[in-house]
Amino acid sequence: MTFTTPLKRLARLALSTLLLMLVGVGLLTARPGTALAAEASPPVDSAALSKAVVAMEQLDQMRISLASTLEGRTEEPTIETMKEVCKPVGMRAIAIGKENGWQVRQVASKYRNPDHAPANAQERQVIDLFSRHPEINGLWEPAVAEQGAGLNYYRRINVEPSCLACHGTKASRPTFIKDNYPDDKAFYFKVGDLLGMYAVHLPEVQAALAAAAG
Image 1 (cartoon, rainbow, N blue to C red):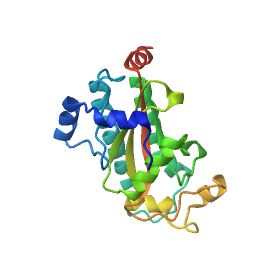
Image 2: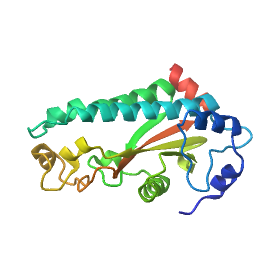
Image 3: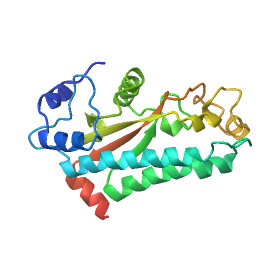
């Protein structure tokens, strides 16, 4: 993976206080050779960074809890199943973004919903990194040029046993998926595989606070 010059500069200037805080509660997993870092005056305050990590952990626990309700069911999942199990996670992600002035997305290279396709080279690179390094749970990157000032937090999403009801073999997919997603790519997964990731963009803190207040 090729790192940009800003990322190299960020990696040399660690935010030691925040790093100690996050590592202390076991919420940060740094990539090989990369630490959570920022310039002397970071574009996003440390409280927002910590809050983003915690929010994504809670969101993923919600996903796992809802998916577990499929365990033991013998009937084929339907569109109503998706509304009960998958849609609430997406809605909660949107709500977290609105509450904090962030942009929160679900991203996957093998996506079902085209809106979840990687939006730029950075997202594609992070997805590839997560797929090659299952030990990495989450990481930070500087915002890309079109996003402006800020940071991006990425948190992996793994396949749970109950996910295979809709993400197993191509032939075993529920009828509603075959009918409604002709370009579906989200199948042939195994338990523990990388399903996708949460992508959180934290803009410059003043903009984030203004958006949250509005």
